[in-house]
Length: 292
Length: 164
Image (cartoon, rainbow over all chains, first blue to last red; front, side, top):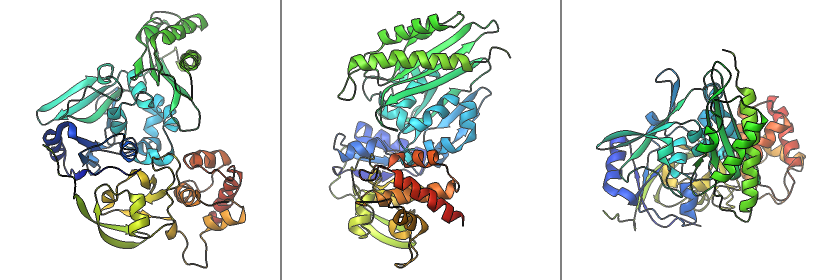
C-alpha cells in the first residue's frame, strides 16, 4: 500500500506545466487533487514515472461568468470551493444537487473538477453531469488550445480525448435558463461511495410548454460515462407526462451496458437505471417553470 | 524521456501544530507516513490508505483532508494540524476530546483522531449544527465500534461547549 518510486516536480507556472507534459508525455501525470490518482498509486494499480504537481496554479481555480449564459470552472477548482459558493446552486443546480454524492467532505476539500473529468471514471458523477449539460472542455498544450465538446471528450475506460501533451484547463457549462429544470439522483451502497447507477438529466421547454431539449447522462452504466441520446431525443417536441417519461426510461435501459459487480448485478443496475431515470425526469419536469 | 526516479528526494519546510520542521523526504512518501514515521506524531492513524476510512484525516491549510492521499513533499511551505495539536496541554483536553470522553464516543479509538480533526473544522464553520448536519459531516469517517450514536451525541455536546 505504498506508491512505487516516481519523480515529483512542482509546476509553478502554466507554461512550466505544459513544458513538463510535453517533455514526459504519457510517462508524466498531472497531480491535481490526487483523490483518484493517489489511491491508485498506493495500490500500485497506476505507476507514474513522473508526477507534475499543478496545485500551485491557483489561477486555474474558480468560477467565472465569461459570457452571459455560461459559467467557466477552472480545472483546479476544488469541490469544497464549489460547495461553499452560493453561485453553484443558483447557476448550476445540477452540480449543486450532485455535490453531496461526490465522495466525502474531506475528499471534496482536495478533489478538483478538472482532475475528476480527466480521470474519466465512468462511475463518477461529474462526467455524466457535463454530458447532460452539453458542456465543453478547454485543453491546452505548448502548440495551442482547443475546445472539446463533452460528448467527444470521454473515450473508453478511464480515457479521454486529451493528447499526451495536453492539460485540461477549464470546463464551460450553460447556466440554468428559464423554462428549464434538472435533476441528479444516484443509488450507492454507502453514503459517498461509488454510484451503482447515477442519473443526471436536464430539460428545456419552449413557450408552448413542449420539451425543446432533454439530455440524460449516466454514471457507472458502461465502460465510459454515457449520454443516452435516443432517450433524450424521444422527449423532444412533446408534452411531458408519465407515458413519455416511461418511454425515455426504457430507451435508457437499452442504451446502457453496465458491467455488474459483487455490489450489483447487471440486471439490477439496468433496473436501477430505469427507476432513477423515471424519477429524475419526473422531478426535472416538475422543476421546469413553463411561464417566463 | 525516461525519468530517473530512484533517488528523488525533496527538502521541505512544513509547520505542524505550530512547530516548523525541515526534513528531506522521498517523493513517494505519503503525508500520513511522514507524520507518523518522520515526525513521530503517531496520533494520526492509518486505516485503508486509499481515502475511504477517514482515520488519517488531518487539517491542511485549514481544511480537513486525507493524509494518505497527499505526499509529504506537497506540504512544503504549508500548515498541518494533527490530533496532537488539539489539547493545550496534557492535563486539559480540547472540548471535542472531553465531549467524546463524556459521551463514550469511542471504544477502540482507532477512528477517533480522524473524527476529531474532521469535526474540528466542521464545528468551526458550523457552530450550531443539527444532528443531520453532523451525520453528513461524519460520513467520510468509518467507525466499526460505536454505531455513531455516541459520536453524534459527543459532537452536539462539543458544539454547545465551544459556543460557550
